Length: 140
Image (tube, rainbow, N blue to C red):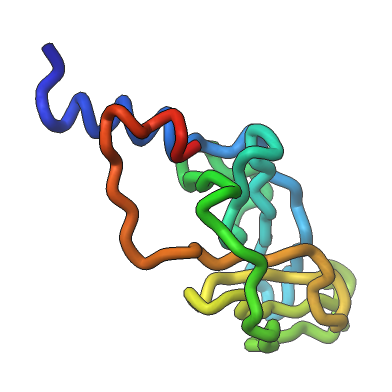
């Protein structure tokens, strides 16, 4: 049989899959420091990503760096996106862009330019989720 940790990992892989890939949303070399902001692409329409991933490398993040959650566990956020940083795009290797808090959990979003994000952002429906073996199929 599976031990506790092995069972947890099996359930996590089934319920909280990694994204298929990432899409680069914005990058800048402002101040000589690179910043790349990536949107996780969920494995199917049945899942969503709650936030973005920021790196200092132009290499796409590993899918294992983040998990997606079942879309039915989520609701579109009612929290207005709040700008938390921007770059003007001055300099040869810099593009204008902005960083945003996009949901009630305070997770990161970004846009190329300074307009508010237009993609849907999500919050979890509940604070606590219980995984019951016999109901697992209904949760995802």
